[in-house]
Image (cartoon, rainbow, N blue to C red; front, side):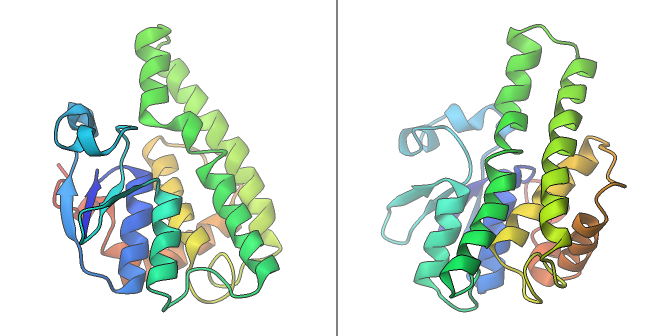
Length: 211
């Protein structure tokens, strides 16, 4: 397999974590978003959305969208599982993952921030305020969810799907100097995850294109 991704893309890091948790080998293909390489061939011809990550399978087929890729990996390589077996528990894990992947990440993605600044003429200060507002709003929801459910990790004592999304989102919040004191459970789980090789060894700072 080959993972087309960008070292600082939180969606890309989610998939790197999942691959590491599964113990799966893959080729790392860097797509530098800062240089707009997502619009260049051959990547643009395979990925209609021009978004990372994209997983190129051994047979040449491509998959997009981090959540879909992670669930594909979980179904194809079921051990260790990233989702619980019981349907209600699975739904709760997915719901928390979507609190991050659907309600925080999309409105703070690079293309949104660029549009705010370049097309709508907003100052960098305003863009940063936008980012911090939606981080705080979203993580407040996640904190309330985790306060009643978290074990060592988001759900129980083994990392799973929700943890794959949580840690990259906290990393982004820290990059933008977002205050995180109001989210003690989020930060406790984040610390536990970063102590695990699957998270530490896929961190943006150790990626081949981290420069």
